[in-house]
Amino acid sequence: MSTETEPPHATALRLWAASCGARMHPALYFAQDAGGMAVHTRTNLPPDTAVISAPFSIAITPKIALDALQLLVGDALRNLSERELVNSYVAMHWILLGNDVLKHAPYVDSLPDRSLLRTPLHFTPEERQLLTGTNMVAATAEREQAWREEWARCCAAFADVAWANAFTWEHYLTAATHLSSRAFPSTLLSSTPSLVATPDSHPVLLPLIDSLNHARAHPVSWSVSSPSHESDISIVQHQATPAGSEVFNNYGPKPNAELILGYGFALPNNPDDTLVLKLSGAAERREIGRDGRNVDAVWEDICTAMGVEDEDEETRLGIEYDAVKMLGDMLRGRLEALPILPEQPTPGVRGDVLDMLRHYVDGQRDVVRDAIQWAEEKAIELERLGGDIGLDLRAEFEGDERDVQDDDEDGK
Image (cartoon, rainbow, N blue to C red):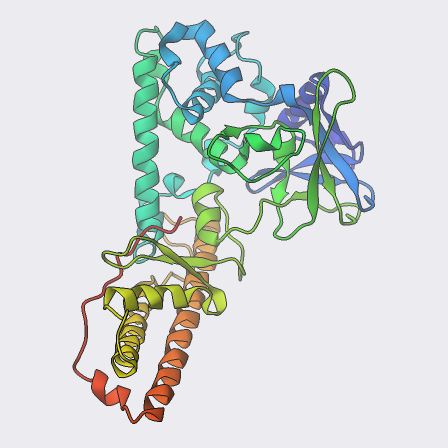
């Protein structure tokens, strides 16, 4: 397929990136897809192919953003966070069109239109209503509050410039969504690149490299070289890619809750799905996964809350049995609270959003059911242990419920 099939803004991105020193494998091209753009290959790519390389200097970093914005508004921005600086810099490309201080216009122009974004803050009211009964309700509300507070701080910093009122919430929301879905940690821009964020790292945008969509467990790696006076970062595909196929990145193992909240998509039957639980008064939130992963930690939290330490064997078994039965009741309550989604799109609910939410809710239901199975099997094990010492735990439990509740924490 020739480059003439590329959307014009994709060709402009590729040519601008090349002028900045970035390199795209000659077999690759951009194609329009439902979420914006995807990268495909015209020819077979052998394993261990470096598909895209870019110099560190092409990145949008907080320093790049601060240096540019200071030329526009002076020193009022020094108290903004790294995220606020990058988001403001991206948004200024939509407000101050053609301003020479803003160097990433071809990249910003290539980003998906706001109408294509599918994170919950871009849902319709009817779509957000479908989240009722899931952890995503609190997660979405917390994110909106945090981002609106960021926007307010940015607006205060820009208050004295003539175009301040043009910096709308929609501008900030769109920029923040792009940063959420496309950013890499600054630890990637080092001689030993890493996708693991640290307390000192910050989000950066890597034009062209961030064009690759996600494929779970897709084998890729990163390499850094210094062919001239500055370093380049390259993404290397370790799996052969047939001609006509999409070329992918791998964002790492992420549950659908995180994919929806941060990226605006979900995977069917996602093996990395989790559910976050936090007991009233407990110090930690617990993330449980498929096949009963980490449910034992929640059970242990309940046991601790009920005072299982330093008890004789009979009392300890009784408390542990009470705890596992209450855990089962709590989980069954979570299962019943999960929404029943419509089979077909309804007014205000888009088909692609409904599909995404179905993947998410189905995964939540599977995680809870696996956790209930773990609790039931643990109860049977404890009944057997109790029987070994002449203790009928089932009879002891009847009528002796305790008040240990799930705080229904957010799903991030």
